[in-house]
Length: 166
Image 1 (spheres, rainbow, N blue to C red):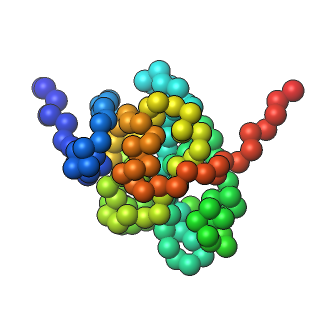
Image 2 (image 1 turned 120 degrees about the vertical axis):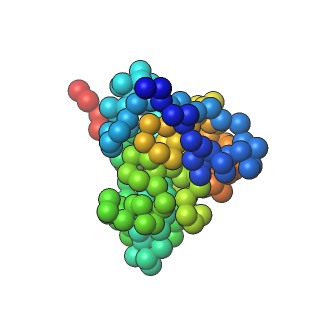
């Protein structure tokens, strides 16, 4: 049985509206798989593949952070960046209600509401980065400067320090 033609997601429609150049990669995926396993499966670099993390601040406001898949968000740095006393990751069960996207398909573009967004500064080292396409089994490739433009994102160092190995 042939596969149905992949549908455009809110993220893709928003990029089209803003006339932002991007590429889409569709792959087989029926359930949540973390970004590292997807990058391994598709032979992609961990450094230029980014995950979207949604947080809640002490104020109750939501914030979006976009970080490399193999790195961790530093919650203290992230809170300071958005002017909060502290932030915590949004509970998985709340992702769809808050963002309009499911776990594994969450992308900073085209959420239900435009939340303050911060892109990790390492993204600017690349001509093109990979983010979720807005559904399971879809990726968007675009210039980090275009992601900043379309999401009105700040760019900051928001990662935990990598531990030195011997």
